[in-house]
Length: 474
Image 1 (cartoon, rainbow, N blue to C red):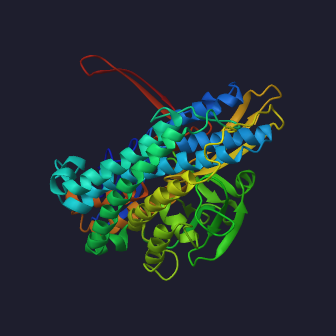
Image 2 (image 1 turned 30 degrees about the horizontal axis):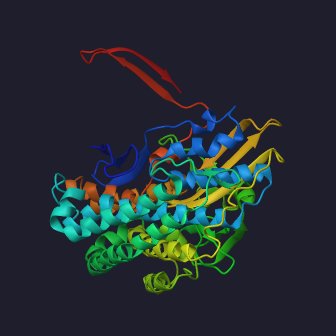
Image 3 (image 1 turned 90 degrees about the vertical axis):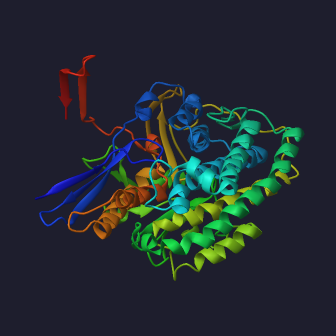
């Protein structure tokens, strides 16, 4: 008899989602989907607001990666203003974004995913969490906490707040870096290197123990996209996008924020509030692609910093061509964290880093503008339209999780079909299906934005738990 297995909620994620797995009469998996069940409305909220308010408003989309939204939003506003921000402001923004990347990757790897890697996929769910990690491997628990603290404290020093700093504004940043703060950040760097060294060393020792998972965790050919510099090194804040195919061949490059809207489309599916991004010339779903740490390392030729360059070369040896298994998102995050620490150290040695000129000013010079940046989870694009008075008339946000959405769904189905046989499954098997989603580190709060008229079920429940009334739309 046919059956549906539901995992609700998917645990150790940022946001609310569930997985449904459909079985046929023989107990074989026929299909599986990852459902994003929450919805946000920031695109509509922005209408009527002055465009210069957008960065601080858009940062409220997410408490984990507010900096990426700040930067992408500010860049869209600067396109409307037609200004180029000062060099020092660009460097300070780059450092802020890298600090966020380090703390977010530390959260994903050490807090959300390492319980599976340290305690095992079959471990008791009561201990399969960061507290269990701290008990089993206290040095790794401390390293993860230390790396997250490193990134968050830099954000606090630069932006005066750890979460939702308003320091990034259209035209640059609100205040320059003080020498005392620069010296404080520099003093934190040796400990950050030591903590990350522990994480990388431990991961390399245990990764091969998970070869069965590596083989079926969203392991398939796909397209990959990410920001890249002119010298083909990794980039998080500036540069342009490159899209490669499953063999590593470049399909499109030089994709600026304004061109992005010409080549990237968004599809909708009835089972999720998150849209599905795709490369328009190939259509949907053939044009679906992956973004984020795995995609970025597949695309770049170098990291641009010596320690991360060595780790990239080792990462590239995992496959003859692009690394396909999404299990290796974990490895890629560690390499990117190392790059982030090195790059922050380099930026602080810039002789102009304490310069006082950190903001350009202008009014409305164009009625439309787009901005893009790399969030920890992948490419982020903000696209705005304004009227002559600078009031927002329309906005569209394309989030990394929506760009990985097709790959996550394919990965969930791939793992479910591999592990569930004859209708039999264990808690550990279902945890592996969840773990596929965790490799992508989706941010579901960021990713859900209404398109057209959203289906809605509103239920009124009495204090005794009885359904008093229900309204259904769509």
